Image (cartoon, rainbow, N blue to C red; front, side, top):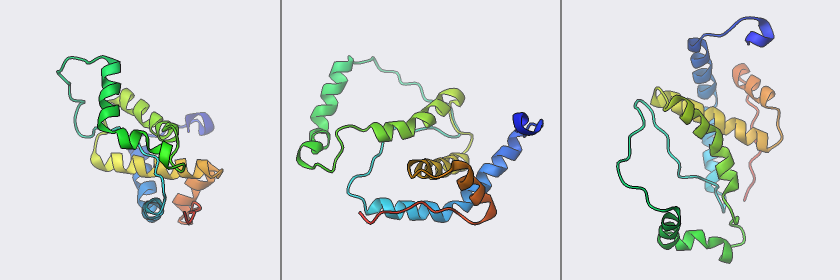
Length: 159
Protein backbone atom coordinates (compact mmCIF):
# COMPACT_ATOMS: atom_id res chain seq x y z
CA UNK A 1 0.00 0.00 0.00
CA UNK A 2 2.94 2.28 0.70
CA UNK A 3 4.11 1.94 -2.90
CA UNK A 4 0.63 2.41 -4.38
CA UNK A 5 -0.85 5.16 -2.23
CA UNK A 6 1.98 6.52 -0.08
CA UNK A 7 0.38 5.24 3.14
CA UNK A 8 1.36 2.22 5.17
CA UNK A 9 -1.14 -0.15 6.78
CA UNK A 10 -0.92 -1.09 10.43
CA UNK A 11 -0.54 -4.74 11.41
CA UNK A 12 -3.94 -4.50 13.13
CA UNK A 13 -5.60 -3.46 9.87
CA UNK A 14 -3.92 -6.30 8.01
CA UNK A 15 -5.02 -8.76 10.69
CA UNK A 16 -8.61 -7.50 10.51
CA UNK A 17 -8.62 -7.79 6.71
CA UNK A 18 -7.22 -11.33 6.86
CA UNK A 19 -9.87 -12.46 9.36
CA UNK A 20 -12.65 -10.79 7.34
CA UNK A 21 -11.44 -12.45 4.14
CA UNK A 22 -11.17 -15.85 5.85
CA UNK A 23 -14.66 -15.51 7.32
CA UNK A 24 -16.10 -14.65 3.90
CA UNK A 25 -14.32 -17.67 2.41
CA UNK A 26 -15.86 -20.17 4.85
CA UNK A 27 -18.46 -21.44 2.32
CA UNK A 28 -15.75 -21.90 -0.33
CA UNK A 29 -13.58 -23.77 2.17
CA UNK A 30 -16.47 -26.15 2.85
CA UNK A 31 -17.01 -26.71 -0.90
CA UNK A 32 -13.28 -27.35 -1.44
CA UNK A 33 -13.21 -29.93 1.35
CA UNK A 34 -16.25 -31.69 -0.09
CA UNK A 35 -14.71 -31.69 -3.58
CA UNK A 36 -11.45 -33.13 -2.24
CA UNK A 37 -13.30 -36.04 -0.67
CA UNK A 38 -14.46 -37.14 -4.12
CA UNK A 39 -10.98 -37.16 -5.69
CA UNK A 40 -9.03 -40.34 -6.38
CA UNK A 41 -5.72 -38.71 -5.43
CA UNK A 42 -5.23 -35.90 -2.93
CA UNK A 43 -1.90 -34.07 -2.93
CA UNK A 44 -0.89 -33.47 0.67
CA UNK A 45 2.14 -32.97 2.80
CA UNK A 46 2.59 -34.03 6.42
CA UNK A 47 4.49 -30.87 7.35
CA UNK A 48 3.14 -29.15 10.44
CA UNK A 49 3.41 -25.65 11.86
CA UNK A 50 3.18 -24.07 15.28
CA UNK A 51 0.90 -21.48 16.86
CA UNK A 52 0.89 -19.80 20.29
CA UNK A 53 4.35 -21.09 21.15
CA UNK A 54 7.92 -21.31 20.08
CA UNK A 55 9.27 -24.16 18.01
CA UNK A 56 10.18 -27.09 20.26
CA UNK A 57 13.79 -28.19 20.38
CA UNK A 58 14.37 -31.80 19.40
CA UNK A 59 17.06 -33.38 21.57
CA UNK A 60 18.09 -36.57 19.85
CA UNK A 61 21.13 -37.41 17.79
CA UNK A 62 20.74 -37.09 14.04
CA UNK A 63 20.53 -40.19 11.91
CA UNK A 64 22.21 -40.40 8.55
CA UNK A 65 20.04 -39.21 5.64
CA UNK A 66 20.25 -42.64 3.99
CA UNK A 67 19.03 -44.36 7.17
CA UNK A 68 16.06 -41.96 7.40
CA UNK A 69 15.15 -42.75 3.79
CA UNK A 70 15.44 -46.50 4.38
CA UNK A 71 13.25 -46.26 7.50
CA UNK A 72 10.54 -44.36 5.60
CA UNK A 73 10.64 -46.80 2.68
CA UNK A 74 10.28 -49.79 5.02
CA UNK A 75 7.49 -48.26 7.11
CA UNK A 76 5.48 -46.85 4.21
CA UNK A 77 6.33 -49.23 1.38
CA UNK A 78 2.77 -49.57 0.09
CA UNK A 79 2.18 -45.81 -0.05
CA UNK A 80 5.62 -45.08 -1.53
CA UNK A 81 5.18 -47.60 -4.35
CA UNK A 82 1.47 -46.94 -5.00
CA UNK A 83 2.28 -45.26 -8.33
CA UNK A 84 3.46 -48.64 -9.70
CA UNK A 85 0.02 -50.25 -9.44
CA UNK A 86 -2.29 -47.22 -9.67
CA UNK A 87 -1.46 -44.90 -12.57
CA UNK A 88 -3.68 -42.14 -11.12
CA UNK A 89 -1.11 -41.70 -8.32
CA UNK A 90 1.65 -39.27 -9.37
CA UNK A 91 5.27 -40.40 -9.25
CA UNK A 92 6.32 -37.46 -7.09
CA UNK A 93 4.81 -35.15 -4.51
CA UNK A 94 5.98 -31.94 -6.16
CA UNK A 95 2.56 -30.24 -6.24
CA UNK A 96 2.02 -30.64 -2.50
CA UNK A 97 5.59 -29.53 -1.81
CA UNK A 98 5.15 -26.39 -3.93
CA UNK A 99 1.94 -25.57 -2.08
CA UNK A 100 3.66 -25.91 1.30
CA UNK A 101 6.85 -24.02 0.38
CA UNK A 102 5.52 -20.50 1.05
CA UNK A 103 4.07 -21.62 4.38
CA UNK A 104 7.44 -23.03 5.45
CA UNK A 105 9.14 -19.75 4.51
CA UNK A 106 6.59 -17.87 6.65
CA UNK A 107 7.32 -20.24 9.53
CA UNK A 108 11.09 -19.77 9.18
CA UNK A 109 10.71 -15.99 9.25
CA UNK A 110 8.31 -15.67 12.19
CA UNK A 111 8.78 -19.00 13.99
CA UNK A 112 5.07 -19.61 14.52
CA UNK A 113 1.61 -18.11 14.14
CA UNK A 114 0.50 -15.86 17.00
CA UNK A 115 -2.83 -17.65 17.35
CA UNK A 116 -4.70 -20.70 16.12
CA UNK A 117 -7.38 -18.41 14.63
CA UNK A 118 -4.72 -16.50 12.70
CA UNK A 119 -3.25 -19.75 11.38
CA UNK A 120 -6.68 -21.00 10.26
CA UNK A 121 -7.42 -17.68 8.55
CA UNK A 122 -4.04 -17.66 6.79
CA UNK A 123 -4.46 -21.24 5.54
CA UNK A 124 -8.04 -20.68 4.35
CA UNK A 125 -7.08 -17.63 2.29
CA UNK A 126 -3.89 -19.31 1.05
CA UNK A 127 -5.82 -22.43 0.00
CA UNK A 128 -8.39 -20.36 -1.91
CA UNK A 129 -5.74 -18.31 -3.71
CA UNK A 130 -3.69 -21.40 -4.56
CA UNK A 131 -6.77 -23.08 -6.04
CA UNK A 132 -7.70 -20.00 -8.06
CA UNK A 133 -4.12 -19.66 -9.38
CA UNK A 134 -4.10 -23.32 -10.50
CA UNK A 135 -7.31 -22.65 -12.40
CA UNK A 136 -5.87 -19.59 -14.15
CA UNK A 137 -8.05 -17.06 -12.33
CA UNK A 138 -6.96 -13.53 -11.45
CA UNK A 139 -5.87 -13.48 -7.81
CA UNK A 140 -6.67 -9.78 -7.49
CA UNK A 141 -10.22 -10.35 -8.78
CA UNK A 142 -10.61 -13.35 -6.48
CA UNK A 143 -9.50 -11.37 -3.41
CA UNK A 144 -11.62 -8.39 -4.42
CA UNK A 145 -14.66 -10.65 -4.72
CA UNK A 146 -14.24 -11.89 -1.14
CA UNK A 147 -14.59 -8.36 0.22
CA UNK A 148 -17.58 -7.48 -2.00
CA UNK A 149 -19.56 -10.57 -1.00
CA UNK A 150 -19.71 -11.94 -4.56
CA UNK A 151 -17.27 -14.83 -4.26
CA UNK A 152 -15.59 -16.17 -7.36
CA UNK A 153 -15.95 -19.91 -6.97
CA UNK A 154 -13.33 -22.34 -8.20
CA UNK A 155 -14.42 -24.99 -10.66
CA UNK A 156 -14.98 -28.39 -9.10
CA UNK A 157 -14.49 -31.51 -11.20
CA UNK A 158 -16.68 -34.56 -10.65
CA UNK A 159 -13.74 -37.00 -10.38
